[in-house]
Amino acid sequence: MNQLSQSMLVWGCTLIFGFPLITIILGQLGDSLRRREHPLTVFVEKLQKFVLPPLTIFLIIRNVLGIEDGGIPVQVLETILGMAIIHTSLCFNQSTNGRLPFLIFYTK
Image 1 (cartoon, rainbow, N blue to C red):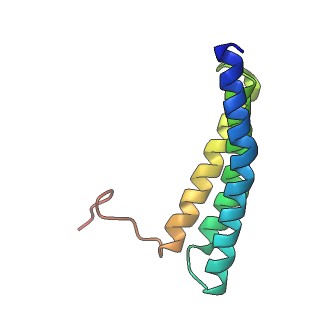
Image 2: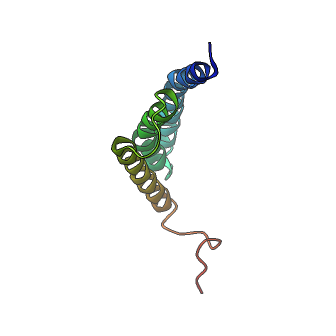
């Protein structure tokens, strides 16, 4: 078994077992936060539903299938992943009462 197919096998197994495990963990965490009416519930749910699936597809395309940069499908997927991350980040900001840390934006 050469190095390339061994790397694809490792990535494939990681994604096969990692994606469902992370999905279950985030689902249980979201349910627990929802029962306690915690403000981070929306963030965890959006992380599970919006960021994790395109991230997994991106990792499959890049690491398992070996498709490099430059193709239109890869660029579309990167854009979708970026938009999902931005949307989820804004939900996190909203769950913290819309306040930004002073380390990032200092206002007087």
